[in-house]
Length: 89
Figure (cartoon, rainbow, N blue to C red):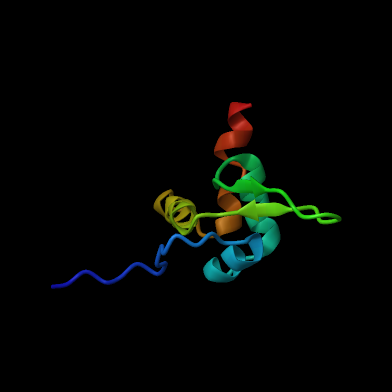
């Protein structure tokens, strides 16, 4: 029996918050909360003149966050946001 491919192909491209939310079918705010709480790794990028910049997320980190939530038995991705990082502070 062959292994099925993972839903995300990591070709080295980084995802914006919008792209990450679209991949896992959730709200952009959910992704932002996961980044702010430390549950989802993301890199901060500087914006050009008159731009606020943003975050970039590796597909492997998005996959780890998503499957980590599912492995803990949580039904909604938004329920796993802020669980570990908020209790450690």
